[in-house]
Each structure stands twice: as C-alpha cells, then as structure tokens.
Image (cartoon, rainbow, N blue to C red):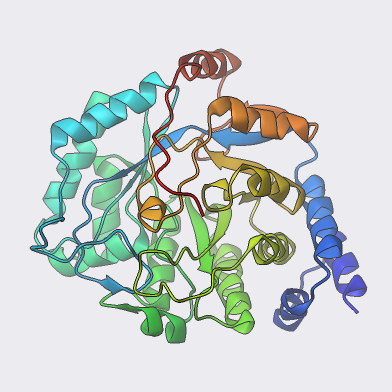
Length: 376
C-alpha cells in the first residue's frame, strides 16, 4: 500500500498530509526506513556524516509555565529553584571551548523577574569571554516571554538579542505544534502561532534556527503530521530552518509518569517519516540522548545525516530519568561503522577545519563522563 508513496518521496515529490499520515499509520518500518535513507543519501551524497560539540547550559530552572511533561522546571520561590551565577556560567563556556566546542545551547525557564537587559548582559558577557562561540539560545517560549516582560514588539526584542550576541535559536518548546495538545499538557506557555511567529520574524531578520518535535504523549498520529506540516509551511516561507530533530517523550519523574513510553520502533518510524515529509529542511539529527548509542546510530540509516552533539552537559532530559552519555570516540566510531567519515560541524552545518577537529579529538581523549544515575 505504501510502496507508491515511498517511491514518490524517494524521487523528490512532495507528500501530502494524508500521505504522510498513511506512512505513520504503517508498520512497515524496514521499507519506510530504507526510503528515508535513500532520501538522506540523495540530499547528502557526500562521504561524511556530521556531529557537533556543544554544551547545554540551563541558566535557570525557575519557570512560570506549568508543563506536565517537564521534570526540570521549578515554580518561582521553590527551594530547588536556581539561577546560575555569572562566573559559573562563564566557566562552563570556557570548559566547552577547551574541549573543542564551538557552540553553547543556552536555555532556561520563563523567569518572572529579569528584564530584557539582564539577558542582553548575559549574552554580552559570554561573547566578551569567548567571541568565537555561537550562542544557540532562548527557545521561542522564552523569547515570547521576553516580549511580555519588556512590553516590546517581537522584532525589537529579537534585534536587541541579536545585537547583544545571539547567533541562532533552538527549536525547543515546540512539543507538538497543535493547540489542542499544547493546552492539554501545559499552562502559561506560548501556543502554536506565536511559536511559529518567533521563528518567522527571526528568519526575516536573517537568522537561522532548528525545528524540533517531542512526541509520544497525548498527540494523535494526525497531530504529528500537522506538526510536520506547520514546520514545512514555514520553511517554504522563510527557508530559515537548518535542521529538524525529533525525540520521544520521557515520562519518568513528570506529572505524566503513567504515560507508556514510545519505544525505538516508533522513534525510528517517526524520524524516517520526518525525513520523507520535510523535503525542504536539509538536515535531520539523530537523538541518541534519548535513545542511546545503538538506536542513535541506527537512526543514521533511517533518514538522519547528523549524529547530533557530544553534549558536554544536559539537564532537562536527565531530570526525566533518561541519562545517556557518549564519548567523542563513541560518536565518531558510530559514524565510521556505517561507512562514513565523521566530521565536526558548527550549528550552520559548516565543517570546522581539520586542525580544529583534531585538537578537539585530542582534548576529549581523557574527558571523564558524568556518573550515570539511571538509564531508561
């Protein structure tokens, strides 16, 4: 039944909403994965596959939004709430650069207190300390929150953040871009149109960003396709997304802990369909952070052309009980085992110089991994 649809996608023809849904409803994982791999190879005929070295720095866990799926946030005035001291944040940046990293993923909660100037100062301090580092920062929910706190137009907020040092925007906070789903699992957080509009205006200003999807909770298969469709439509309009990353909801330690977790089958199928459906987004990133090394590697045969980041530090997924850490050798080895040359890239999917790549390899040889508290 799906053979014609897969052949259509492999040959570069756009799938419709209903055709994408038919693929998600199928259980023919092998055929869908093979087609996604053919598309990835057509879009990326090069003999290498990429990875990045960066660090997730969560500058605060204090958040006025209430997200049932989040184990990381703490409400204002909670005893476990924190805001990183600037000296500690800058030390984390220095450590990242020392390990060959070229990017900081900077995200926090929706803090009720700080004005826009506080965030501008944080960006400026990072760029003054490490001018070469790209700050991949502030998800659309955070930026939308900044407009409310500052009472300034979105374009003004984005221009000021860019001028202060913001280099690109991560796709966090997307979950599923369908308001029914968003209202069911979160309160006090940006809805679909405003999430998309943050990205739209950023792209119009010349910025680049990534797009994401967290699935396997209360959404239907139709809503997964609607999410992909909204991302594809915006990419048609702006061309500003560099990559798409999807991962499965991690329920442990959340208010949705009784949700049955989606497994590797559903992850690989959804990623493969994403590669087939998102014909205008150049890169698909594997999610080894939630899936582990072997499934993360297998995802490279299910439409992904990038192994994602070494991720020197990760806190949000870890709070939900999923802790997978890899060495740089493991990431490079996973790529090599598939017959590709492993190459380090930056957030814009430009290869770093071979000398810089070799320095990063040497710097990471003796890096100790964090202690694994739990695995799932």
